[in-house]
Image (tube, rainbow over all chains, first blue to last red; front, side, top):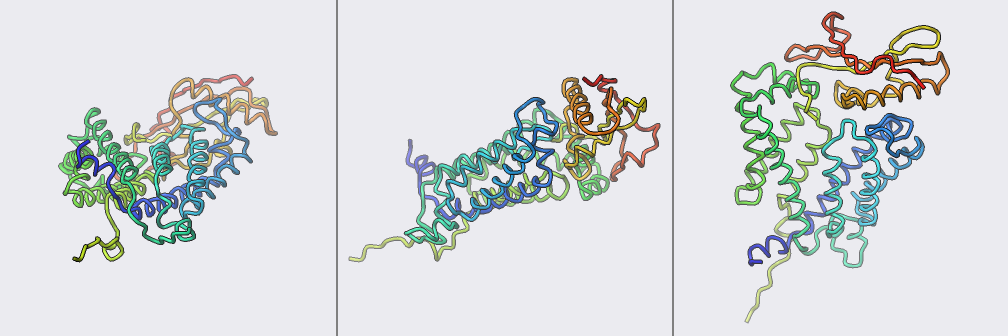
Length: 281
Length: 112
């Protein structure tokens, strides 16, 4: 492996970035699970209809208990108390619940599982966590840099989702001429703002926006790893804020906004980074 | 999730034939409250294939007959759809009946 490649995969990375990501990711999962709580009987219990039918599901009481366990474990994951234990529990409960039913299945269900699995093998508990604050080394809030490998895996996970969404759009067609975008903005998934936008936009805007979407998804995965990263992050933010405003996509957009803002942006303050050693002769 | 994106709205419905001879709409809201989007219920997003629709009919027979009231003898599953004008939402109740298209997925499935 060349030095540059070695540095990319295993070089030092600010541990604070993974810690901050874990904290906010845990809060997003917690918020999502709270929305499930009133409907656990319908969503996860054996008293409800699921697709595929006949698959194992817990009793209504057990479904509620599982959901409460998931809410609790995700909150502990966010605050970083017994971080790895509760990360494992969150992954386990999340997988158990979202695999019961595939009706209206959301992409974030599987994406979150991959993210949690990567975080499990990272040092995401080293920063912005009660574990770090209460631990013997007391590296709160910013510890020394750690190996960049888990961070790279998370970045690649985000990048490949963009890229293969773009490939899928290019293969299915309708994006260059804008017809698919126009149909989506006029669909039942559209928000009131999306419906209004669809009616107000001139005809030429749909091919322009459709082509921009395709170009963003195919190029951003590469630009996010180059010096053009700030531009790619800005484009990603505009992209996801636009989607959140116009379409009902649940928490997916918020997860991507979090990922591009934290995983691809270093928020460490220079004054808190480790000073370089200088040898005075 | 956008695989059925179009300006055609759709809503799943079920009509039951009861032991007392009555034929009437079954209120799916008794078992399905979860919203899948701003204007759609989770149950409206069921896959439209024969196997899923037959399973759904069997499920309705079972859960309805577990409760008190006239016993359900047979159930039909319908998909109702209508065209929505660009730029605004239109609920099924606002659409003239002749403009609502009905597709029957399951015709009078007998309850066990």
